[in-house]
Amino acid sequence: FFGDFKTKSEYVQVIFRDHQVPDGDRVKILVNDDIVVGDVTLTSGFNGFKLNLIEGFNKIDFVALNQGTSGPNTAEFKVVDQDGNIISGNQWNLATGVKASIIIVQEKE
Image (cartoon, rainbow, N blue to C red; front, side, top):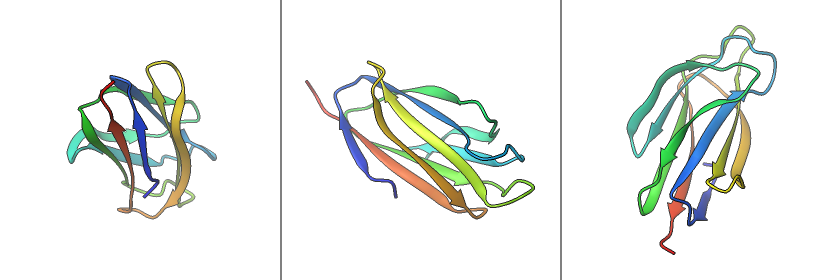
């Protein structure tokens, strides 16, 4: 668990990449237990998606689907608010099937 973070933003950008040598690492991403990215292969450059936040808790889970050719699954993610500020960012080295989670709490203005 990478923690919970508060924001007043209406949306965030969730971006991710392989933070070591791209070797075929794949992840699945869920938001509030709904799959938003079913299977993506991580590259050296950031890819991602826009997440419209709901008021209150927005749980983002990253699930390692494999460990690439050189294991473990080495991903980096960043969550960026609508003003371009990094709310959170981290790296992990996960075994297949392990989940890394973060919670974004959207507060009313």
